[in-house]
Length: 76
Image (cartoon, rainbow, N blue to C red; front, side, top):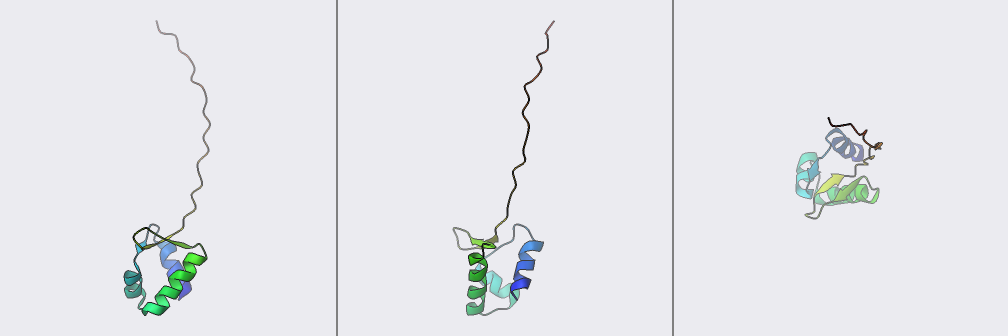
């Protein structure tokens, strides 16, 4: 069941579920759902939003840019 939940979050980036939504989606009782979501939060796979929803922790790698000075052009 844990892999199924992880798979859903991996397949749908930006997926945001409350505990009742997760229970309904996966057909779990409250205790199992709380334990599963809690384990995924502890493993740093999910995080909890301010309003209590669960989302996947996504690692963003910043793009490295090179800034070069502009060449000055003469105005006639």
